[in-house]
Structure formats: C-alpha cells, structure tokens
Length: 370
Ligand SMILES: [Zn+2]
Image (tube, rainbow, N blue to C red):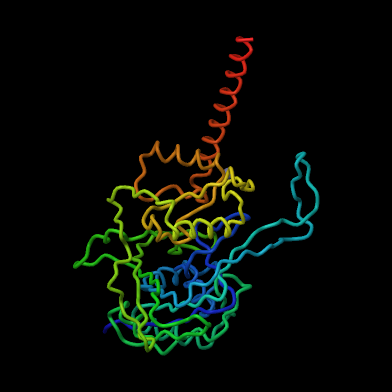
C-alpha cells in the first residue's frame, strides 16, 4: 500500500517553535515548525502524555516524513515575561530575595505554514481523526499560541511524493501586499534511500527529532531547503532557481559589506536582538557592535536573519579566535549554542587578561621612559 499524506495548516497570531537554541531565560523560535513541535501537537491531539510518549508513539511519529511550506514566514517578536512571584532569586551580593524570574520569549507573528506528513495510511487516518477531535487543546509550539483556524488543511491523500503534495495545495493571499510571483521557502525531511544513499550537498542538520519529551532529548535529521514559486493563480511549483548557492565544500565566501541586501539583513538582526550581545547581553553601541555569520551558506546578500547573530566586540573576537583554532568551514559557531558556552567564556577571559597585561606593559614602559 502506498503512503498517505496528512496536511496541517499552522496559522495564528503567534507561534513559537523552540529548538536547541531555545533554552534558559532567552527562548528563541526556529524559523518554521520543528519536527518535535509538530509531533508534540499530534501527541496532544491523540491524548498521549509527555511521560508516556517515548514508549510507543515517538518512534512511530518520528518516522513520518515531514515537509513544511512557509506561506507567510511571519515577523519575529519578543515578549517580556515573568515566571513566578516569590521565587528565590539570587542578588548581586550572593544573597537571595523573593521575586519573579525575568525571561524573554520570541514568537513568529502572523505566520502561516503548510505542513505535510507522509506515512502509512492507517497511521495517517488515525492522526487525521485525532486532529478533527483533539483530546487536549492543540497549540502552536507554546500554550500561549492558539491556532486561529482548524488544523487540517484538507483531507489526507495518497501520494508517494511529498514535494508534489506540498505543491498541490494552492497558495492564498491574505494580507495586503501578498501577491503571486513570490517565492516560498520549503523545508523537506531527507531520508537515505537506495537511489540516494548520501545526503545531498547543502542539506542542513536539525536536532529536533524527539527521543523523549520528559526530559527533552533530540536526535538529528537532514533537512533540504527548497524554493517554491507562486504562479498567477496561486498554483505552487518548484522554482528553477537553486536555493543553495554554496555547498559545504566551497571556500568561505567573503561577505560584501557594501551590499545593500546584506546591510538590511544586518540591521534587521541587530533590531531583532534589541542591540544586545546574544552571548554576554551587553548593550551594543556603534563602536562595539558586530554581527556574526553563523553560516556563510547564503553570505553576500542572501542571508536569512537566522544566519546572523549580534555580538559585542569582545564576544566576537572570542568566537572568531575559537573558529580559527578549529579551522571551521562554511558553518560557523553559533554563540547561542550551549555547547560553545564554556569555550567562549574561557576565550573571553584570556582576551581580557591579555589586554590588561598589554595595558600594564605599556604603562610600565611609559614610566621607564619618564
Ligand atoms: Zn558579548
């Protein structure tokens, strides 16, 4: 029996899809629904709890092949958020006092995604029934993000081709300025097959396949990014233009700072980071601010906002020095990735120490001259 495809529409005023960068008090969102987020939503509809999901359902649901079409990518938005009212918060002098924990949460505003899930027909039928009559209230990544329309885009259909299925749903304009002719980003699961045993160059790695929800643990998957084009009648087709201009084997391209598209991407990133260093949270002035490429895949003007991070000069120098040490290629250090945290702190301290030694040496030399 051939595969069936389930179609979800994830649309609402707010959605937020946490990924591996979304930890601690600054909680960011990925650019599109993550596999763990979508599987969590399916578990809520089925009535499978966080604690029992890994026993049976997570392996079954993770095997579904997922494709996401960003019909409207949305606008990134921050929320000022407090947790608890009488938590024991540590003060600067090492004592504790009762207070609320401040956190920052990021959302995608007014985004709309078409999600297609490909799998075995009885499983798809069961999920479709659950989504029509969900056991628990479904939400778009966080409980504060209700969907603004039914989650099922259309009835499931038989198809062996996930990409063709994603193109089969017409694109509909909704906002002023929405017009045909635009391109839509599309993220497709890639799984090895006899015909294609090795992931294509340019495939991205996403750590969002859930192994357990409590505690959260994730396995990687390959994702292919494609561009789709919207025709005059809203029909969607695969764009002829390749989405990936650079493969991981390419030499590191130089960012062209005079390029107006790059300048716009850089300015948007600073704005999104509220002119605060994403690592040490220092406010950024005109003299200290830098914007780091965490990947050079689209460098030179095609950067997505997620390719860049705002950093202060000190954190930037620390990250760059670590990168040199590792001889990194096209993908660079993401300073928000907790795995780099200790290394960056250590390198920052080395730089501070070196600079203060330099200052003292110069002062001593100056005194000797006097
Ligand atoms: Zn910093």
